[in-house]
Structure formats: structure tokens, C-alpha cells
Image (tube, rainbow, N blue to C red; front, top):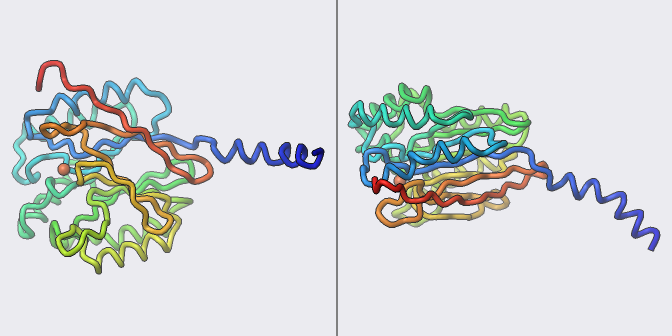
Length: 263
Ligand SMILES: [Fe+2]
């Protein structure tokens, strides 16, 4: 009995520290600016997020615009800038297939426009010893061809290699095997999986599906959020993620209330 009590005394600090929160962040996805019917949903998010404490950053995981960016008029660009600048914490955005894919010929121009608007196609941020990688994976999917000014695999490999600790990768299209009509080819999926397993990747987070997803690539969780607008009947949500010191990631899904003015 005494040995058990001593053991518990010894293990208790370890057990408590295992579940200590390291940091939190918010994911928004698929707001489809330009699909006019439900903009009131995403417009209400900054106020809700700004009222929270302990959020390190916000990430918007693609499909920012409903039509490709090379087609977006200035009022939609202004709408995005107003939204992105409304958050008190750092804000990151990665492109979705709606933002830059309109046939393989037009995609590079839309990708350039995305770079102009946000500063980059892919980037990263270090957070409490972890690396958050905001990654444009689209050239690896069926949605667009390659761009001569952007090599996604080189970027990802270098960024993972130089990471000070564990990493989380944010992208738009979840790397899922969905058969021959899937977004990722079997070759791209193999390349992706071998790359993320070479490094300490703790999670992959995306959107695109317009529904919830939790899947696994070995021990690496693949999470996708439902959209942050209702798209004519879906549940509009954003997510708050918690990263724990023991390396686990959890999330809470927050329902966005329908806008009162019916927008
Ligand atoms: Fe979408």
C-alpha cells in the first residue's frame, strides 16, 4: 500500500503535466466570399474569436472566394481584406481549389494573385516550440498543374526539416484515398505519406469536404472541418484546437449562429 502511494506521488506530477495546455488556435474554412447568400455567417466570426483569450492565431484553410481569384472583382478583395484584418491575433490563409483552380492554364495567374493578396502561397509560424505550416498543396492534387514559381514538396521538406519541434500541417484538400475520382492521385498520396512520416508531424488539418472528418495516416490524425458558412443548409462552424504538452491535439466545434439580417 505504501509503495502504491509513493508511486502515485511520484507519477502524479507527470500525469498532470501530460495534459497541460501548450496553446490554442482557431480554424475557419470554406467561407466562399462571393456566394452572397450567407456572408453574415463568416462576418460574425471575428467578434466571437476576439472575445476569446489564449488564442495564438487564426487560420483560414482555403476556399476563401467562391470564384477563382483572377476573376474576383475589387469589392470581393476588399471584403476579404476587411475580414482578415478584423482579428486581434495573427491571421493566416491558404488557398483552396475555388481560389486558384479554373483549368490548368488559368491556375498560375490565380495563384500569383493569391500571393499578391496574402504575401505567399505557403508559409509557417513557430509557436511554443512547435511549427505551424500553412501549406498550399494544390499542385499535388488534381485541381491544378504545377507552377514554375512554386515547388510545394521542396517547401514542405525544407520547412519540416528545419522545424524546432513537432509540426502541424494546414492545407485545403485532405490527402485521402478516395479512389480514381479522388482529389489526390495514388502517387501523390504515397509521396505525401512518406514525407510526413519522415518528420515529427502531429496532425494535418484541412477543409474542402464541407463536412467533418477525422481519419488517420498511421499515427498522424487527419482532421477536416465543416465550412464556416451554411452553403444553403449545412451547419456553419469554426473550430478551436488545443495543443497539449504531451503532443496530443483536440478540438471543439463552435456553431455560428445564423445572421439576424438574413444575409
Ligand atoms: Fe469549399
